[in-house]
Length: 241
Image: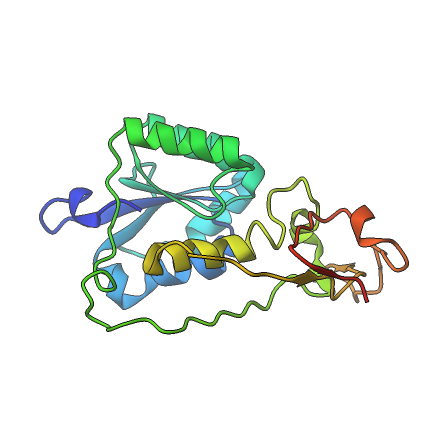
Protein backbone atom coordinates (compact mmCIF):
# COMPACT_ATOMS: atom_id res chain seq x y z
CA UNK A 1 0.00 0.00 0.00
CA UNK A 2 1.34 3.44 -0.82
CA UNK A 3 2.10 6.08 1.76
CA UNK A 4 -1.15 7.94 2.40
CA UNK A 5 0.68 11.24 2.89
CA UNK A 6 1.74 11.15 -0.76
CA UNK A 7 -1.80 10.60 -2.00
CA UNK A 8 -3.65 13.53 -0.52
CA UNK A 9 -1.57 16.63 0.26
CA UNK A 10 -2.86 18.88 2.99
CA UNK A 11 -6.08 17.79 4.66
CA UNK A 12 -7.83 16.42 1.57
CA UNK A 13 -9.53 13.04 1.82
CA UNK A 14 -7.92 10.18 -0.07
CA UNK A 15 -10.47 9.07 -2.66
CA UNK A 16 -10.75 5.28 -2.78
CA UNK A 17 -12.09 3.11 -5.58
CA UNK A 18 -12.66 -0.59 -4.88
CA UNK A 19 -12.68 -3.29 -7.55
CA UNK A 20 -14.82 -6.20 -6.36
CA UNK A 21 -16.80 -4.47 -3.61
CA UNK A 22 -20.24 -6.10 -3.58
CA UNK A 23 -22.70 -6.03 -0.69
CA UNK A 24 -21.93 -9.61 0.39
CA UNK A 25 -18.46 -10.61 -0.85
CA UNK A 26 -15.05 -10.67 0.81
CA UNK A 27 -14.41 -6.95 0.34
CA UNK A 28 -17.66 -6.12 2.15
CA UNK A 29 -16.30 -7.94 5.21
CA UNK A 30 -12.56 -7.22 5.00
CA UNK A 31 -12.25 -3.77 3.41
CA UNK A 32 -15.44 -1.69 3.58
CA UNK A 33 -15.90 -1.83 7.40
CA UNK A 34 -12.38 -0.47 7.93
CA UNK A 35 -12.93 2.39 5.48
CA UNK A 36 -16.14 3.32 7.32
CA UNK A 37 -14.54 3.20 10.78
CA UNK A 38 -14.26 6.64 12.42
CA UNK A 39 -10.47 6.31 12.66
CA UNK A 40 -10.20 6.10 8.86
CA UNK A 41 -13.33 7.96 7.73
CA UNK A 42 -11.53 11.26 8.31
CA UNK A 43 -8.73 10.20 5.93
CA UNK A 44 -10.37 8.05 3.26
CA UNK A 45 -13.51 8.51 1.18
CA UNK A 46 -15.06 5.75 -0.94
CA UNK A 47 -15.75 7.34 -4.33
CA UNK A 48 -15.93 4.47 -6.83
CA UNK A 49 -16.92 0.81 -6.96
CA UNK A 50 -16.54 -1.80 -9.68
CA UNK A 51 -18.14 -5.25 -9.78
CA UNK A 52 -19.02 -7.85 -12.41
CA UNK A 53 -22.44 -6.33 -13.13
CA UNK A 54 -24.06 -2.90 -13.25
CA UNK A 55 -26.74 -4.06 -10.81
CA UNK A 56 -24.31 -5.17 -8.10
CA UNK A 57 -22.21 -2.03 -8.56
CA UNK A 58 -25.31 0.12 -8.12
CA UNK A 59 -26.25 -1.85 -4.99
CA UNK A 60 -22.75 -1.30 -3.57
CA UNK A 61 -22.89 2.40 -4.35
CA UNK A 62 -26.19 2.67 -2.50
CA UNK A 63 -24.97 0.62 0.47
CA UNK A 64 -21.71 2.49 1.04
CA UNK A 65 -22.66 6.04 0.08
CA UNK A 66 -23.69 8.80 2.48
CA UNK A 67 -25.01 12.32 2.01
CA UNK A 68 -21.45 13.63 1.97
CA UNK A 69 -19.86 10.64 0.26
CA UNK A 70 -21.39 10.30 -3.17
CA UNK A 71 -19.90 7.61 -5.39
CA UNK A 72 -18.05 9.31 -8.24
CA UNK A 73 -15.74 7.91 -10.94
CA UNK A 74 -12.63 9.45 -9.37
CA UNK A 75 -10.04 7.89 -7.08
CA UNK A 76 -6.52 8.40 -5.76
CA UNK A 77 -6.19 4.86 -4.44
CA UNK A 78 -7.53 1.69 -6.06
CA UNK A 79 -8.15 -1.37 -3.88
CA UNK A 80 -8.47 -4.70 -5.70
CA UNK A 81 -10.44 -7.48 -4.01
CA UNK A 82 -11.34 -10.10 -6.61
CA UNK A 83 -10.42 -13.72 -7.32
CA UNK A 84 -6.70 -14.27 -8.03
CA UNK A 85 -7.39 -15.04 -11.70
CA UNK A 86 -8.62 -11.44 -12.13
CA UNK A 87 -5.89 -9.73 -10.08
CA UNK A 88 -3.53 -9.04 -12.97
CA UNK A 89 -5.98 -7.25 -15.24
CA UNK A 90 -7.38 -5.06 -12.46
CA UNK A 91 -3.99 -4.26 -10.95
CA UNK A 92 -2.28 -3.40 -14.23
CA UNK A 93 -5.21 -1.18 -15.22
CA UNK A 94 -4.85 0.79 -11.98
CA UNK A 95 -1.08 1.02 -12.32
CA UNK A 96 -1.24 2.15 -15.94
CA UNK A 97 -3.65 4.90 -14.87
CA UNK A 98 -1.01 5.98 -12.31
CA UNK A 99 -3.29 5.16 -9.40
CA UNK A 100 -1.86 4.06 -6.08
CA UNK A 101 -2.70 0.40 -5.56
CA UNK A 102 -3.74 -1.82 -2.66
CA UNK A 103 -3.84 -5.40 -3.95
CA UNK A 104 -4.93 -8.21 -1.66
CA UNK A 105 -2.98 -11.45 -1.34
CA UNK A 106 -1.84 -13.44 -3.32
CA UNK A 107 -1.31 -10.65 -5.90
CA UNK A 108 -1.91 -12.62 -9.08
CA UNK A 109 -2.66 -16.17 -10.11
CA UNK A 110 0.95 -17.35 -9.93
CA UNK A 111 4.54 -16.18 -9.46
CA UNK A 112 4.80 -14.93 -13.03
CA UNK A 113 1.78 -12.64 -12.64
CA UNK A 114 2.93 -11.44 -9.22
CA UNK A 115 6.32 -10.52 -10.67
CA UNK A 116 4.72 -8.72 -13.61
CA UNK A 117 2.48 -6.69 -11.30
CA UNK A 118 5.40 -5.83 -9.00
CA UNK A 119 7.61 -4.72 -11.88
CA UNK A 120 4.85 -2.57 -13.35
CA UNK A 121 4.30 -0.90 -9.97
CA UNK A 122 8.03 -0.30 -9.56
CA UNK A 123 8.17 1.44 -12.94
CA UNK A 124 5.47 3.82 -11.70
CA UNK A 125 7.51 4.64 -8.60
CA UNK A 126 5.13 3.18 -6.02
CA UNK A 127 6.10 4.14 -2.49
CA UNK A 128 5.48 1.60 0.25
CA UNK A 129 4.83 1.96 3.96
CA UNK A 130 7.87 0.59 5.84
CA UNK A 131 7.48 -1.02 9.26
CA UNK A 132 9.59 0.59 11.95
CA UNK A 133 8.53 -0.64 15.37
CA UNK A 134 10.14 -4.08 15.23
CA UNK A 135 13.35 -2.92 13.57
CA UNK A 136 13.63 -0.06 16.03
CA UNK A 137 13.37 -2.40 19.02
CA UNK A 138 10.37 -0.55 20.45
CA UNK A 139 8.59 -3.79 21.44
CA UNK A 140 11.68 -5.66 22.58
CA UNK A 141 12.93 -9.04 21.40
CA UNK A 142 10.40 -11.34 19.71
CA UNK A 143 10.61 -14.82 21.25
CA UNK A 144 7.53 -16.51 19.76
CA UNK A 145 4.77 -15.81 17.25
CA UNK A 146 2.12 -18.59 17.13
CA UNK A 147 -0.50 -18.44 14.38
CA UNK A 148 -3.80 -20.25 13.77
CA UNK A 149 -6.19 -20.25 10.83
CA UNK A 150 -9.84 -21.28 10.79
CA UNK A 151 -10.80 -21.57 7.13
CA UNK A 152 -10.82 -24.33 4.48
CA UNK A 153 -12.88 -26.74 6.57
CA UNK A 154 -15.26 -29.52 5.48
CA UNK A 155 -18.03 -27.12 4.31
CA UNK A 156 -17.41 -24.59 1.53
CA UNK A 157 -19.76 -21.87 0.32
CA UNK A 158 -20.36 -22.38 -3.41
CA UNK A 159 -19.27 -18.82 -4.17
CA UNK A 160 -15.84 -19.81 -2.80
CA UNK A 161 -15.48 -22.90 -4.99
CA UNK A 162 -12.29 -21.44 -6.49
CA UNK A 163 -10.56 -21.99 -3.13
CA UNK A 164 -10.83 -25.76 -3.66
CA UNK A 165 -9.52 -25.93 -7.22
CA UNK A 166 -5.76 -26.37 -7.50
CA UNK A 167 -5.79 -24.06 -10.53
CA UNK A 168 -7.70 -21.22 -8.88
CA UNK A 169 -4.69 -19.63 -7.21
CA UNK A 170 -6.52 -19.53 -3.87
CA UNK A 171 -5.86 -22.82 -2.07
CA UNK A 172 -4.95 -23.02 1.61
CA UNK A 173 -1.24 -23.00 0.79
CA UNK A 174 -1.57 -19.94 -1.43
CA UNK A 175 -4.01 -17.89 0.67
CA UNK A 176 -3.88 -18.90 4.33
CA UNK A 177 -0.23 -19.95 4.53
CA UNK A 178 0.77 -17.19 2.15
CA UNK A 179 -0.86 -14.52 4.33
CA UNK A 180 0.77 -15.87 7.47
CA UNK A 181 4.25 -16.19 5.99
CA UNK A 182 4.00 -12.80 4.32
CA UNK A 183 3.26 -10.86 7.49
CA UNK A 184 5.62 -12.94 9.65
CA UNK A 185 8.61 -12.52 7.35
CA UNK A 186 7.82 -8.84 6.81
CA UNK A 187 7.67 -8.09 10.52
CA UNK A 188 10.21 -10.55 11.89
CA UNK A 189 12.53 -11.30 8.97
CA UNK A 190 13.23 -14.42 6.92
CA UNK A 191 13.36 -17.90 8.47
CA UNK A 192 16.75 -19.26 9.42
CA UNK A 193 15.43 -22.82 9.00
CA UNK A 194 12.09 -24.52 8.38
CA UNK A 195 10.65 -27.80 9.69
CA UNK A 196 7.09 -28.55 8.58
CA UNK A 197 4.52 -31.34 8.40
CA UNK A 198 1.24 -31.44 6.50
CA UNK A 199 -1.79 -33.70 6.55
CA UNK A 200 -5.25 -33.82 4.97
CA UNK A 201 -7.78 -33.52 7.80
CA UNK A 202 -10.93 -33.29 5.65
CA UNK A 203 -10.77 -35.55 2.57
CA UNK A 204 -14.41 -34.63 1.82
CA UNK A 205 -15.57 -31.10 1.02
CA UNK A 206 -19.29 -30.30 1.00
CA UNK A 207 -20.38 -27.42 -1.21
CA UNK A 208 -23.36 -25.41 0.00
CA UNK A 209 -25.33 -22.31 -0.89
CA UNK A 210 -26.73 -19.76 1.53
CA UNK A 211 -29.99 -20.13 -0.37
CA UNK A 212 -30.19 -23.90 0.12
CA UNK A 213 -30.37 -26.33 3.02
CA UNK A 214 -26.80 -27.54 2.43
CA UNK A 215 -27.93 -30.98 1.29
CA UNK A 216 -25.93 -31.22 -1.94
CA UNK A 217 -22.45 -32.72 -1.87
CA UNK A 218 -20.57 -31.55 -4.94
CA UNK A 219 -17.08 -32.67 -4.00
CA UNK A 220 -16.68 -36.18 -2.61
CA UNK A 221 -13.15 -37.41 -2.06
CA UNK A 222 -13.65 -40.30 0.36
CA UNK A 223 -11.44 -43.22 -0.57
CA UNK A 224 -9.41 -41.20 -3.07
CA UNK A 225 -5.63 -40.95 -2.49
CA UNK A 226 -4.58 -37.44 -1.53
CA UNK A 227 -2.33 -37.25 -4.58
CA UNK A 228 -5.44 -37.37 -6.78
CA UNK A 229 -7.38 -34.67 -4.95
CA UNK A 230 -8.00 -31.48 -6.96
CA UNK A 231 -6.23 -29.54 -4.22
CA UNK A 232 -2.60 -28.51 -4.49
CA UNK A 233 -0.81 -30.33 -1.65
CA UNK A 234 2.85 -30.02 -0.71
CA UNK A 235 4.58 -31.09 2.46
CA UNK A 236 7.90 -32.07 3.94
CA UNK A 237 6.17 -34.99 5.65
CA UNK A 238 2.72 -36.44 4.99
CA UNK A 239 0.26 -38.17 7.28
CA UNK A 240 -2.30 -40.20 5.33
CA UNK A 241 -4.05 -41.80 8.31
